[in-house]
Image (cartoon, rainbow, N blue to C red):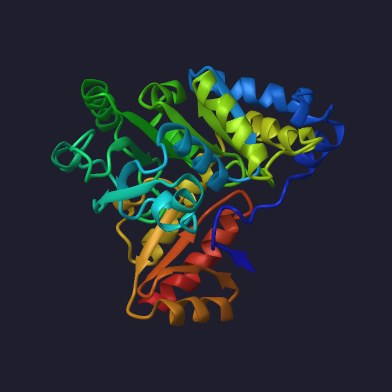
Length: 332
């Protein structure tokens, strides 16, 4: 089967497994795992921030980062199809007491005018105060779109002006970096905190990181433990992340090229496909998914009329070509 459901389905390469087996480890809850510390220091420096914290999942990284910026009874503003609003099982409200208000953008982008109209730092005792704005880069559910750097810089400037903070769900920020050539530190400079993932395009089996100022990361470390997310000899997992950073970032360009091939075959405008995700609109998404599966191609629905195709480390060019043939036939 050619699995295009998500870039989370990848398996560690042999070289990654060898790196994991050789990892020097310690008890990370005590702060004694040298490989975890090396990963955290490297990722923090990559984005130009003071500190980082290794977590098991991207959802946990987002929850820890957002609750570090937004207190109980406060709100974060975000795009309506953002992962933090749609795909984290209400964790921000359930755990952090955070509420959300959302804008809608066809490409998942920043609506500066909406933010200016709806930002509410203090409207008195009856209104929820705005504490932060969250953006997603790349934006998953609208097709892996890249947020323009100029929009992020404008958001940063406005946030500084009005005194609010900015979080980036950067689960696939590595894809944005490779698609545009934007240095990762430029993305880091635009926000107060990030959540970045190693187990999607980079192909590690486990792991994300909270990135931000030292005080936010220190508080996130306490909350990670409080939520049961402390890991012991986690260096075997961190080693996979370090290997991915060394060997799997530049190869993301291959995934982007394969996504272009799938888009063209499925009748999607390739100009709308920035990175490794293709969103295909159809009258019967479950029917298309079932038909593709019968021909050896796994896809997934993200709505009753929307199918998502995601290229990744385990999809070769030959796999992409075979999947394109199937999709072309099914969508013609």
